[in-house]
Length: 394
Image (cartoon, rainbow, N blue to C red; front, side, top):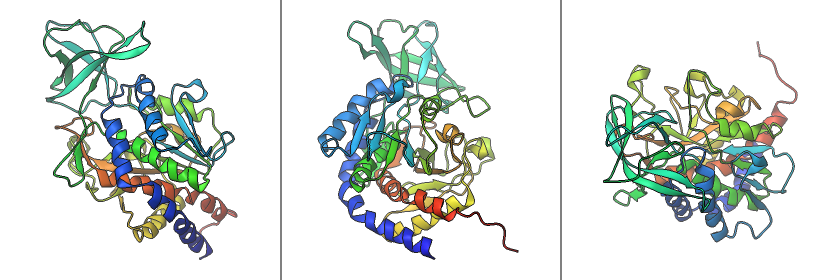
């Protein structure tokens, strides 16, 4: 009973800071800026870090000395935010991948360029607006080399430029372009939200975590997308590089989009759809990729469920996945450092332009950001409860 009371009290103590820092307008500002900044894998940090830094500076995040932004953590090519002390081990981790789906190019064929997916390519037949990005040596920056469309027929993607343009070449990256647009003022939006929603939620949550004095490491890996293959360790290379530099935490959370009911590849999994819905709140999943990713231990999952019940009384919604299917993400890397992994994301449709424009709900990202702050209270209580370990009651 004391653990339950401690959890309720700690969550209640965090509530004023959550309501002060995690607002709908702030989440929208971060989300819109990130959605409007496509970030191909291995170039995401270079393209999106300036956007993140500007957003944090505008909110005065660096003035108190409680929030520190490392643009290239340990030289691994990905940024992190650290709250509390500037150095030392952090008992609370939260990961949200910075990169978007992207494609590498093959030799030009007439008026189009065949593409090699550096992601899970889910669009079988269709098209979406896209840009080709090129690193410009003389200016040391990325530029748009060509504008056009990604077209997919029978699951084979190509890039078709708009009008005449210089041929694409090795080193170029093609990424979808889908600006943030709200629908009917309801909070529903379309745009390149995978994983802009997770990054926005974690970045906004960092402001409250810093003010609360929580010792946390909030990581934004570049290269979560990439070759998937049949096993685990062929993806999420960015987070693997980060966690190799860290001591295990008391709790790690992975914040990524989770497909809602009716996503494009449901048929490949027997037609069973995830029950989560847009506008229903953040999403808590027990395991990912049918256990090819992480699996949350029963006691940790129950702590998360209890937390969800308490913060529901604060107006923060967390919906549970029905375990039909949740995508693996950076949990693939983190599970090799700690068993204490929670999958806490937000629902979305067509996250890889499966059957049209991606769409999600602003309020789900808002609820995720709030839930992440509250979840920071779970780790210490879980650690205490596990001492001593208990057996099975007969």
